[in-house]
Image (cartoon, rainbow, N blue to C red; front, side, top):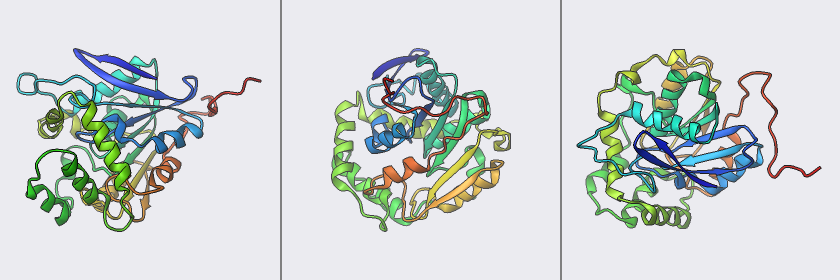
Amino acid sequence: MERFVESGAVRIWTERAGDPGCPAVLLIAGSAAQGVSWPDALVGGLVARGVQVIRFDHRDTGRSSVVDFDADPYTIGVMARDCLAVLDGHGIASAHVVGASLGGVLAQWLAVHAPARVRSLTLLATTPMGSRRDGLPPPAPEFLAHLAAGLPPGVESDVALFRVFNGAVRPFDEPAARAMLELARSRAGDPAAAAHHDRAAWRADPSVDAPLASIVAPTTILHGDQDPVFSLGHGTALAAAIPGAVLHLVPGMGHVLTSPGLPEEIAGLIRLARSSPSNSPPCRWPRSST
């Protein structure tokens, strides 16, 4: 089910799969990524585990509002509040929160600043928010070389980037990646506006330097040993900063879920811990008629 929700003056496109009576998983995509970047196989795998799943387009991506960034710049904190608006728009008090890359930074922000809304936390291919990433390993040479090549924008450039993101160990499912990237291009109100996320990530925002040690949500960190953007040292730093966090190394995984079978594998690793014994047990979709 698709729905637009309001975050101030911004309209956010959302999609919900599964039984709305089940516990919710909120999927937060990375920088410049639309909700459709979360593979259908991952969404289906989660629904089969007994949850409803919500994915959405960040502001400046997909079918969500395009913002005049120069006139109305925004920050990580603003993007994180969009995530809360998505939960509010669906009437969800708390969710299992899953964030990838920049989405993982937004997920950390939620766990720090809105802990009652986060039942569990899964951080995928990401880095500690704020200045904690200073001094961590830089991106891999092949990723920097791709950026330096300055390929013209378009699907072919996007596919080339995802090939680098995928890493060289696991096979790259180019047809699936191309189909997703073509879909994303076709539904973007202004493809160039997604670059505003990088500007937002570097804008001063004191809220991102709040201590990660305050996170109380059960936390799992999923990190590949072939990530060309955030090497394993970033995942290790996250695990050290968040009390009780469990670091799960995914062999051969890069920065995206574009290897055959990987979306299903990650769906099985996403944390669905209950926040308290009083929570209702997982349900199944569709519900039995008996």
